[in-house]
Length: 273
Image (spheres, rainbow, N blue to C red):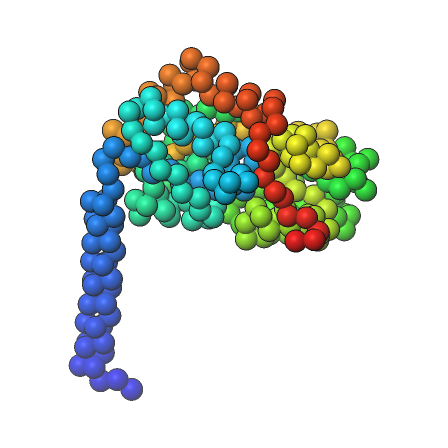
């Protein structure tokens, strides 16, 4: 048993450890801030959702989100530096000031408690894609009571959606979107939920055999970039810029170009991967 004095020393030691850890984090954040050039916007996003963002055959990031970020920077008179990161590290990277802006998928009330959203630039729907063997499926509700598996990646709102639909037993969670695609093409899962634009692009340009279930699972999904809640000045500048790019049709032209033509195509993991 520790004496009262020993317990006191132990508590002091623990407090000192937490204090110095806190000081280290503060200094790390301050250093990161001072090293960032004022004329550059650092954008964090995921790189496995064609046509929004993917690595092309020159191993460079390409897609709708990349072109839109460049348009924002050009309108604001700033350079844009884009970094790809796993989905569940986007918000933590934003909070530690590794990124000025992040693209974290659709707007949710949970995320809105942590970040400040800019005006939405895209409205889309969620769809279910399946293998040809399930081509006769017309609704996600048909998965109830079946052994069919739906692959989703960690941190996405699709996990809660499937729970709300009573399909937790059909849900298989993977670390990231790449692993979901790999599981799908290796037939470890039977279906994937995804943004309708992503599904359409993949079906048209990458995998014509993939089947999109007719039912729209969730409609009117709004997508927007996000900043830290305390960065009000940056939020105002970005919001004004995004509104202008929407009003003059810049974003629509970018989106249309990627969805109606055949740009450099990303590679998806297939069974041989």
